[in-house]
Length: 165
Image (cartoon, rainbow, N blue to C red; front, side):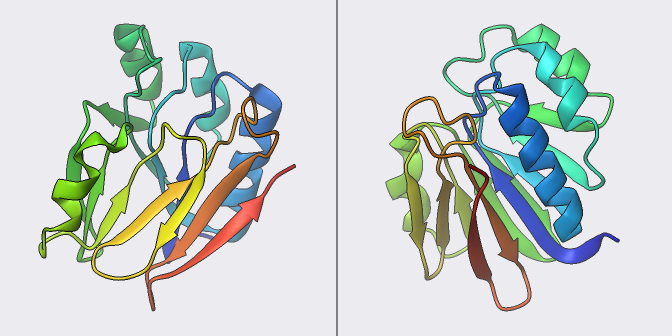
């Protein structure tokens, strides 16, 4: 059952299909109504797994996402991919999503953004406050040996790091 208040956050899946399957299962089991991906899918074939999500999907391109046309075509069947940074509002919460943290400092100064999501570093980074900053670490587990995603409960703005390894 999908819960409107639960958002799944993922980044740096890097073609690791077994890890993506685990993430999709975790998001579906938690009832995530929205999944936000901070980039680095790599190949369009990963859309087959992400297409099994029960919630809506929004993502941005990462520095390793060279085949943007193919990724856009495959992901358009169930979601949307954007050039970063991408800003949107969901259930009254203002999000900014990027891959590279280069613009992170600028967004952290803004009072009109509630949640900033980024990736690229493959390291978990949760900073409470306004805005709430979230880097879910890496799903692909290529650099750290740890596959993680984050659940964000919009009721209370609470985060939960989920280790998929």
